[in-house]
Image 1 (cartoon, helix red, strand yellow):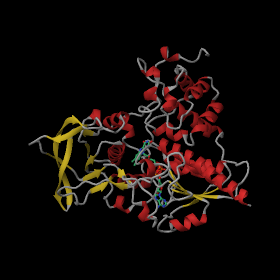
Image 2: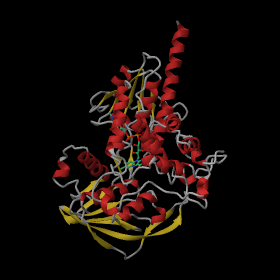
Image 3: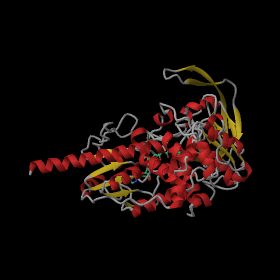
Image 4: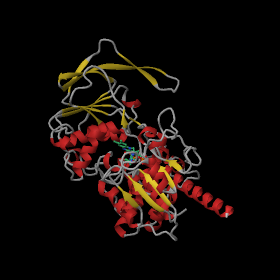
Length: 478
Ligand SMILES: Cc1cc2nc3c(=O)[nH]c(=O)nc-3n(C[C@H](O)[C@H](O)[C@H](O)COP(=O)(O)OP(=O)(O)OC[C@H]3O[C@@H](n4cnc5c(N)ncnc54)[C@H](O)[C@@H]3O)c2cc1C
């Protein structure tokens, strides 16, 4: 073991510099600065190189973290990049937006008694450096294959699969109903967490490597699913989950109550320089308004922090459980609190007030009851605890369900689970339709970018095996 590792006993944990809340409230730029090479080496050297690397075990793509930390500590950055990108198609993205506190860093063994290694920031540093130095190159397959693969959805799941299939030499076409590549990485996640040029440069690289993109094209509307299957040798469905869960109750139909993703997509489009009528007319713009966001997940955190940056008069987040029981990452809650968001814990909306347009939310205090079968505490309203919160804009961030894909695709044989996600064989990633595979949120339900990448990689390998089997069977029959 070189001297330079195991430094956690001497070197404290340091994250890259975080911009002051006052400054970052005024723009949509990422909030963390960059490590310089010596900081990255020092932080990487804190790794204890433990026998069983729990960071790797708990990483969905099984990143070989201890080894690339060691290479970074030794200044061997090109090798660190090679290793880190061998298991992850978009490490610079995961380094920015993975919930490391729940994955690798949360399982770092030095976490007990010391602070964990800042794995995410080192991962980001390695790949940002690789881009700066020109080490990240477009794919060059060793040989071309004749078979063509269709991928529906240009989110992380579809893009990871596209890259893996193209590396194997397949002719890959990615279809997306949006006008840009990236899925929720471009239109969901705000740029203060993930600046858009980081995602868009991957689009260019994939194109330069021979992946074909057909954008503004919705499968099931512009091209039928049956036609797509006929055009290609295999199809991967990676369409994500987009049906927003709704909220009922008196007044829930008032103007000024909007779904989270509409709000975030409009903000992202404005950041990309698009014109958005619903932003210009104020429908999806928090400026000068009292904003109430309902929900406690990461989407709710993205909404409150976007509203702050748009110049809302006040921003409150209403969540029916307490801080300890919220699904959102604690790091994001802390960032939101620093930026001036007020959290109203243990509060649930009962009704929306206003004449035509919302002017307030009537809420009720909740208390946590006994745990249910899953161990999660139930929530019950506290009698006589109603209170009103003024609101000129209410944003509903209550989660997402899958759209009804068999109907949208005009393909009733496409099998779904009782949650509406696509049913696949978990080893082969194939649906019950031969040659039709699925990956990402449309299989798992709303999840994480890193899980979509993992699924996309695994599905690509299975598509390859499927095609090779078909080729061998055809040869045998000749
Ligand atoms: C607001 C928000 C914030 C998030 N923040 C984080 C975070 O910080 N960290 C994290 O790890 N995860 C985060 N997530 C989750 C993460 O974005 C998703 O888990 C991930 O993007 C799923 O990838 P995917 O490829 O399965 O689907 P998506 O990214 O949803 O991509 C699906 C693509 O399919 C396209 N599509 C759908 N239907 C059709 C059709 N019929 N024809 C053609 N194209 C179609 C869509 O246009 C889209 O581009 C967040 C999600 C949201 C909503």
